[in-house]
Amino acid sequence: MDAESYSKALACLDKAQVGRLLKHLGQSEKELDDLSKITLAVADWITHLGMFSDAQMYRALGFIKPALLQFSNTPTDHPSLACTVVVCDGRWVSCSNADGFLDAENFEEVTEMPDIAVTHIVCDVRQLYSRMEARTRHIMRKESPDAV
Image 1 (cartoon, rainbow, N blue to C red):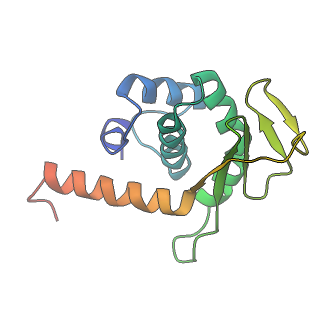
Image 2: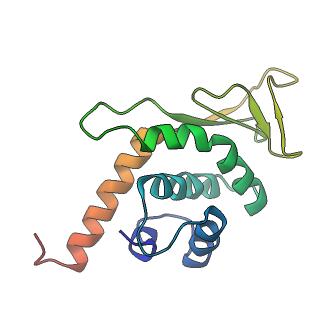
Image 3: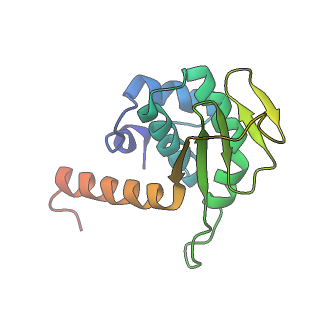
């Protein structure tokens, strides 16, 4: 699937934002691999939260990339790995199997937060990926009703 088709299923990122993010990732807009698709979906979720600048989002995506890469490399015939991304107190970003947190204000990686977090916003990446797959299938059926 290409970036233009996939971006139709995104809730918040516009075409220009998708293009900039893919350029930042070094990914072609012509054919998206699973890592690019899930990265765009998580970027869309982060944008939906409305608390990070593009620079903070790009840095957060870089921090969680190992978890997204592991998730995207899971064979389709195996149950998907649990994968979550969390934003704590609107500042600290982490994910499944991470060794610490990214301070989104200072772009520093730390092994622990300086204080106990009160607010946790969690994204279940497996469910987000499933939702995006369903949305893209629905959009493709609407655009090509005669396609099998």
